[in-house]
Length: 581
Image 1 (cartoon, helix red, strand yellow):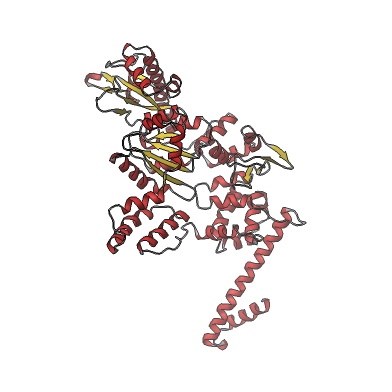
Image 2 (tube, rainbow, N blue to C red; image 1 turned 120 degrees about the vertical axis):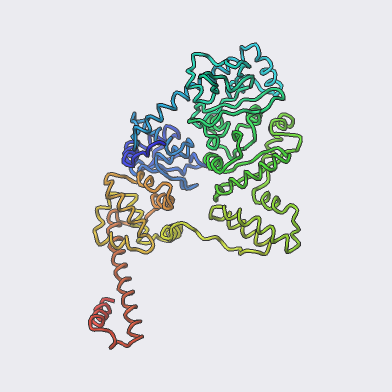
């Protein structure tokens, strides 16, 4: 396992990369005052609402709400993972990424790099064999019958594995071929090729590296498809076929079409449908869904209309439902029983296929239709059975509006359950601030303090011990404020763009992004003066609230036992606090 990237390195990396230069190289910016503007790359708009602040090292779109730092931009715009974004920034500066337990990670890198290399070499070998091997004519004829052009064959690097037991070049190291799953060992240390007399489909990861292969026979032999085994570079549940080719188009798709096989992906691409991918001999998993939702807000599962296809579609729903948070959607397109995506797009063409995709069933419709099959919903028994089937699945949905709607619809159909919104399960302190941050009124003193601290980390020097104590004991934001103070204390040189990385993956991450761009009405004062005055006001309010709470407690006790029943210390405290009130 790779070691963790040190937090200090990430902070320094963000501080050294100019966000204006990084974004301008991808989205041309124009200076507008102290900020830079462009039309937002994350949604369609006519007037520029995408703003980049060099001082804060932060971007924000006033149209769609997208915001973040240099890492967030690479993750959203180039659809990189967090680690890939860090690697990109480090490469820009010519830095090597340090990791905890570095030597263990270095050994892992040294062991897998040769596997990538040997699989790339095997890809070139198979591609050449498709062109020149005497037995490859049947493979070329097969691909031609399937309607594939030379360009699409080259685009997907399709090749041919000759029928011999030892066709792979002797120049490729035997131990690497074995480790990559390209050969199988026999007794006495000998090896033979895993893939023989098959059309070969290289499987690439998101970075374009060949991590495995799929091989298809041209006749009736079995197995019809043969995949590479699990290796250090190839994990079936993490990869999907065609994703690299989709990302290489640099076009952000509205949806990704999930099909069952390599040929479906390639045939659709041949007809201009370039947003299709396929799982690799395994059922669609939640890992696949999380991966694909990084690149598109909607998945359309397009399976054969036979029993196997319908079963695969339902299993995909069951597996992917935990990934279906608000803003994501799934549809289901079951094809006519005599067709698969390959045959249908060849028969009907791209436009007709696109119409079918647009009319695919919404998950909600498919979900209730499937579970209601063979149930009489006019009977109590039928409605009860539907409730028993649906409830456990709906519990797997992430908390949000979609889950609320599905549960409300189930309650409407069956008469069971309550059509009430599910509770937000995030941290209660976060909920309080999140609710407050959506209000249109002037922000409260608490929100102003937190927002100005994030936007101007140097203001932390203005927070004395008394103010810190009052902020950390606040029943709404105490834990959040305490963590923020720790970050600002440990990283005195951090700027606004670096703070969100300390919250990434936590419940407060979205809150930090909102506070980073919260507009504070400053009237005639500057930000520092506003912060100082607001902090003083907040501390005063906290003290007044504490006095009121203590007085209320003493008054209730006096009402219960009489004022004379209080001891002398309590009576004196009551008089003193009453004067302050």
